[in-house]
Image 1 (cartoon, one colour):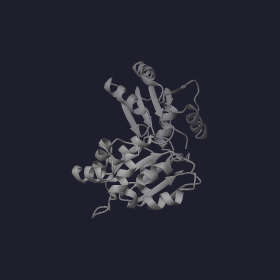
Image 2 (image 1 turned 90 degrees about the vertical axis):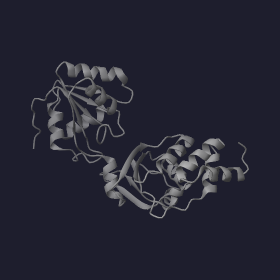
Image 3 (image 1 turned 135 degrees about the vertical axis):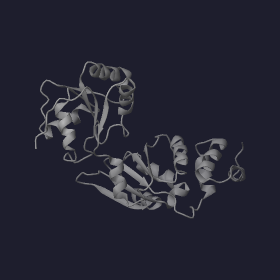
Image 4 (image 1 turned 45 degrees about the vertical axis):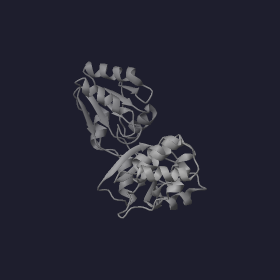
Length: 285
């Protein structure tokens, strides 16, 4: 079925694109990509390839870049096009725009400027991973990419682990082992989790187990491809907290004050108890 080419109202059209398999795109998305006056893309090469696969001719239409480094100037340029009566389709590199994607500021500015903004539903790695994880999906929280610096990552995890929901985390194959190791230094090591890799592609892989089991499995491995880590919530009855281990890990990279604050938030234990345990470990304030 060929895409329908129809006039579009001026505005911004957020187009979800496949996360792997090129056929995971909606007919409506193809119609908009074929009809828009201008196509803005997080990665112009990926978008051009997608258009070619689906037989969408560009003609004299423009494909312009909009990515993390485009900044306000890039947004102003797209808003100017819309103000001139143009329809602009924004395609993410993979998945749904605005999900771990630079499109947030663009959609916000267009909407605040009184422009028309609409979204076309489609593929999203976070929801696909949640569906395959086998973990509770009645309440979940997508938290994006973990910080790369160890101290910042540990503090970030401490804040997240108190959320009573399944967590969905994006991570690079180069850092997934470090993330699992940090999780194993907390009470979350006994939580059920799933590592979802290369979703919808030929070598799609789902690994399920506790955080500790997954960490052990991957300790000597180097994974490839995009990864989503789905972390289940704490089970009813609570988790066994190794307070000394958590404090020892935190104190390697933090001051005593920050370590106590982080562990207190992560465990829900009284601050006084955590502080006294830190003192007992021989650290000075």
